[in-house]
Length: 126
Image (cartoon, rainbow, N blue to C red; front, top):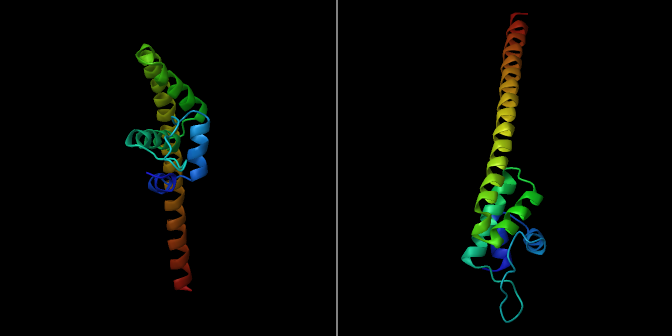
């Protein structure tokens, strides 16, 4: 796939994909005879993984570390696993915090809805 197709498929810009390649998040993407990037299925798998992790809030630095470890081979399996566990734990805390915020927002919205309804009824009686 060409970079524009990959960008569109994953909702990223071409500049972001080039940046990810430049900092080592993506492997060097093969190029066709004209020098245009040609993403393989494997490359797209990495793009999908990185996008998912970034959408979940994982820092680029953590992902770069993960990819470097991955590229070192099976001797880093446990280190990668621990890195992912740490990030999962951070994400669980964020989700919990966001759920608390959601509950507070829902409470406020319900109160405003009730208040608005009560005001409307009061004005109807006048």
